[in-house]
Length: 324
Image 1 (tube, helix red, strand yellow):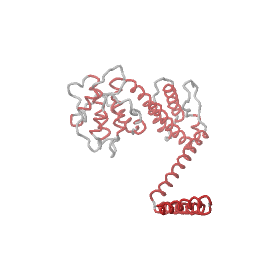
Image 2 (spheres, rainbow, N blue to C red; image 1 turned 120 degrees about the vertical axis):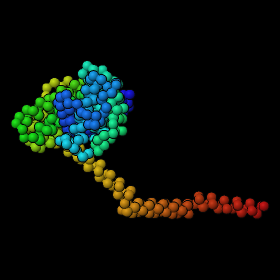
Image 3 (cartoon, one colour; image 1 turned 180 degrees about the horizontal axis):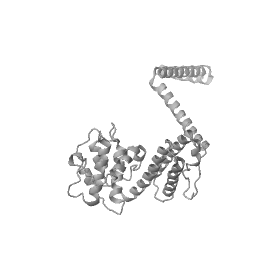
Image 4 (cartoon, rainbow, N blue to C red; image 1 turned 135 degrees about the horizontal axis):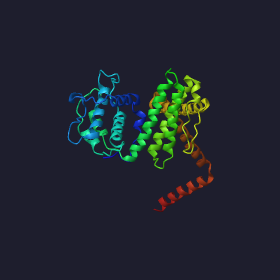
């Protein structure tokens, strides 16, 4: 069963632990023909229904889980994988099953049915089972675009905060890849609102990284390309420090205004100070109502038409009583 078209299928890219997951999958891909024992495997791969390429993908997933969860692994941490991590691993497995001239829409759910209760300090087994599901071809292509963008972003992040030789040229290489991938993404007709939102969020993260790079070393202004606004842009253009700073300032000011408004609402609604202010407001309203009533009464007393009307009314009532 594929992902529902009404949900945001791409938001997990923002919250996945990219570096940790990427390193685990890269290591799983480079460990050769090493096969884990049944005790070391989270998913049972040696069963009917998981064959050929699917078995190879299943075994790589098991190696990745071992690297992510084993206390002996350099990649292991004390925290559990989050829901975005599971969704990313599902994307990776789907692409491995379908993205290299293979067409396999059934094995991924077979993986989910054969998850065993192991590595409980690291894995939420029910959440993993729910995450392992088929992804439609068009969604898979868009996810691969986002994956390439975030992989280049992670490489840039590592380079920017290193002191390695040639870091500026390497940064430009990955920045150029982001430019080309992003331009290709916005030039397609299949940009739905969720994919557009995912691209916009990537752009924000990229610009924040550029700002950090400029703070570290202003030389990066010549090595970090602007994310294109128009699919027809073919030449790299570069940020100025002012571009990024102005955006950061506007975002900060907007965030500050919202924060102040929320604080004022909180004080007014939920504190003794707010209770006092509301009580004063009620007293003022009551005072104004009383003044208004007094003014109306005064007008009634001073208006001769009203006096004559009242006299007639009472006189009629008196004569009625006499006649009866």
